[in-house]
Length: 185
Image (cartoon, rainbow, N blue to C red):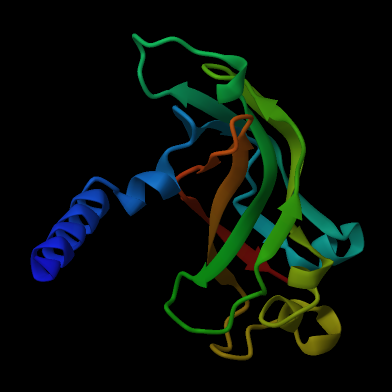
């Protein structure tokens, strides 16, 4: 009898675990998905020496859309997403390894369920990225070339993701978006 009770508890636990999809908990944004739906003013070539003087490189504008997962379902204010941060991660177009440190910034705003949130002049490079190799190699006083390749230009892939939380408390983020920027002295 004791053995049968144990088997019943194990089976009940397995059924409970089978009913839980851990991926859904991480990706269910309270009934909404976030997506980068538009951006303007993306730099394609950046002078590192000018960026150093400015202390910043930005995207003119970027739009985050909150897409309701069930288009026939009801929406509520609990599905609105409070934006919290974004990240920019760098990789080399040429496959080499030396890259600037990631940029992680806090942001504020709310993407209403089925609506958008737009950001103007959003930084994609700050002094932490500009003042470190390989970008700092392009400073005039450092020779103005990539120390790894000897080249006077460097193409980096920039990958961005945005993070938020629905009013109901569910974490939600965008899929990564990537673009390539060429850096010159």
